[in-house]
Image (tube, rainbow, N blue to C red; front, side, top):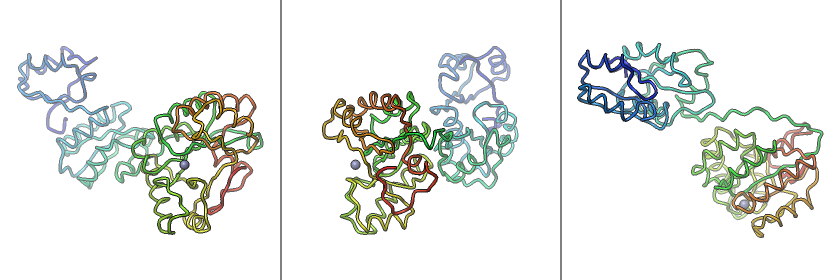
Length: 368
Ligand SMILES: [Zn+2]
């Protein structure tokens, strides 16, 4: 705001401190821009500005401080030739730079590590194509990949720590097809509580509606791979049709979460020579399964539990569907029981590379 040639004043606990009120009164301030929602500057504080004689009070409030900063940029800095980028985790760098930002009529956009910048901030950069980008603070405050993401719109993958597991110990890969859905978070939660991970084979057309869920899967340490764009039997399509199904799905996953899967699961497990050769040309492996409880058919948690427990062994890839409450309920018993039996719950990639090799493009894997 200081870029408008106005000073920045602070509210505290949503209220106007006496010094702030005194400044506004003494200098007969006629216009005030409030930055942030009523949690930042309360409605009561806004009202008291009127009582102090302020003629025009405007509020720019996004859903959070990052969105607020982007909103201010988009409202007041159209045509700006430069931007300042500062951490929004705390404000000193942004405040220190605000004088320069004011002088240059360039907005300050706030970012945080490991999080794709606000889409309105990315939109501002795209629209105004600033010739000059000034980063306030070191790479600890504003990492290079975040600046890159702000300038290109490329999503930043959620921060994950590589999982520790014993590659020689017993392990199984739980996999969930056809989602994401409203049941996915419940399964993720069960995995989290039991130190487990899984692989989610998502239908591409569903990804943008569940983008946060896709990011949550990755942040939890689990894995996301494609299951075609619209659940087509790939063997009924031409090579270019197959390619488009796989490409669109991986693009959707990448734009939601910043990761590019190295494998996919063909719908119905349906594979042909053409499907394999297209997959190979795209560098993708194919994942099927070795244990199938047919959870979609029974939609019964007990049946799903019993079928998994009677067939599971070291190296199994278990197919389930995160589309049913019954499957999410079954997982609340299956996952702790597998852990009790000393199975490590790993991703498909971890399972298939535990012995040291890499997954080969164009090859179908159904178990370790
Ligand atoms: Zn499916």
